[in-house]
Length: 100
Image: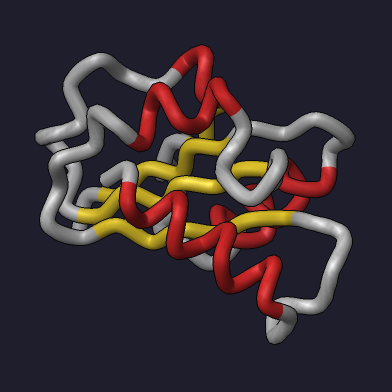
C-alpha cells in the first residue's frame, strides 16, 4: 500500500505523532509538513493527515490540504489540549472530516 503522512504542527506535538506513525509504516513512506504536500495525492492509497486544533477545527494550513484530499482512504489525527473523549476533541474531528 502506497501511503503518505502529512502534518501541520505549531509546537512540534503533531510532528512527533506523525513521526511515530511513520515509524511503523514501510521504510521510505513520505512524511511531510503541509507546505510540502504534493499537489496530486491521487497516487496514494492512504493519506494520513495530522493537524493541530484551532478554535474547533484544523488549523488554516491543514484545512487547505484537507479540502483537496479526494482519496478513498484517509486517516486523520490531531493534537489539542484536551483528552480525546471530550466534546471539544470530538467536535474538532467532525469539523475536520467535513472538509474532506
